[in-house]
Amino acid sequence: MTVGVAGLPMYDWPEVNGAINALWSAIADRIQLAGVETPASVWRPTGHQTLTDLWTHPDLLLAQACGLPVV
Image 1 (cartoon, rainbow, N blue to C red):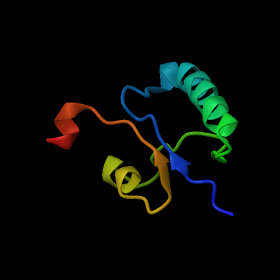
Image 2 (image 1 turned 180 degrees about the horizontal axis):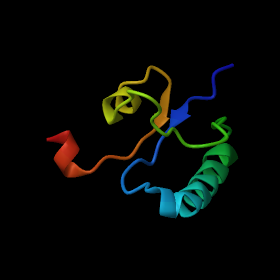
Image 3 (image 1 turned 60 degrees about the vertical axis):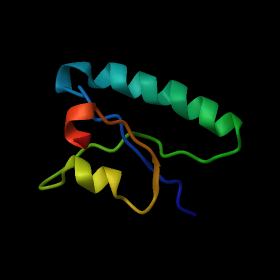
Image 4 (image 1 turned 30 degrees about the vertical axis):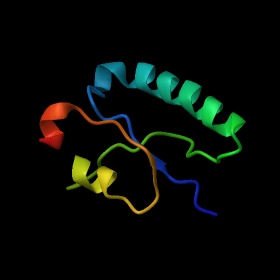
């Protein structure tokens, strides 16, 4: 079963990865309380992936966006 993809890419710099992971854990806990399975960790781009790859992923569960990339 697919548990979806979740990303919190805005301001997810290496020096704050731990804080982003903790934020995702808290969000995932609440989503799971509603009976929805969640991925174990957030999506982070690898290789040539871009934010568009996250935002258009067919199994997208949750994503974050800033105004400028949306424009």
